[in-house]
Image (cartoon, rainbow, N blue to C red; front, side):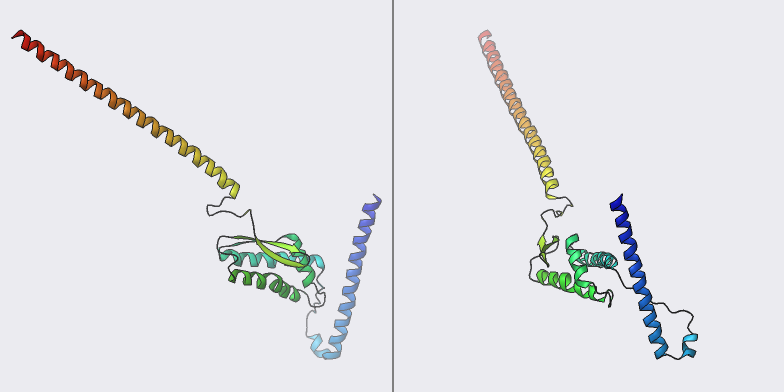
Length: 214
């Protein structure tokens, strides 16, 4: 209970500090506007809105949105891009700047993801149909082919092996049926040959009896 109360107090303190910082910024902006513009001009403005600084949590959510946009462009080229959470955290850290908002974040994504991945695609490391996964090495984001990528039929390798087993069972079943059919054909041929020989022998005996009777 004490830890919960302590956590709640910390959250409230952070919110209070954020609100206090916003009021300070708004006050400085308004003072600057009063020094720059005449009162007659400011009176014609219905409302002046001062946007609050972006927090780290908000920057992290923006990373998700921008990453999804990049994944959509990669998918349009026939590839899948999987961006892990730890890589997104690094991008958010690199692109966080309370003063300039999300503009540094756009540059961070371009430098850490877009440019690096485009270079490797041009080098032939990745091609259409590949699933690319980000891997974090310290503060560096690397790209590797995912072993769990889907195959052309939309299945994972394990699914494909199951399909192969099924196909193998079907093939064996078809093979055994074919062998049985061939065996039956051979037996039918043997029976037919025996029947012809028996008829020939009977006909020969009948001819001999007729000659003896004469």
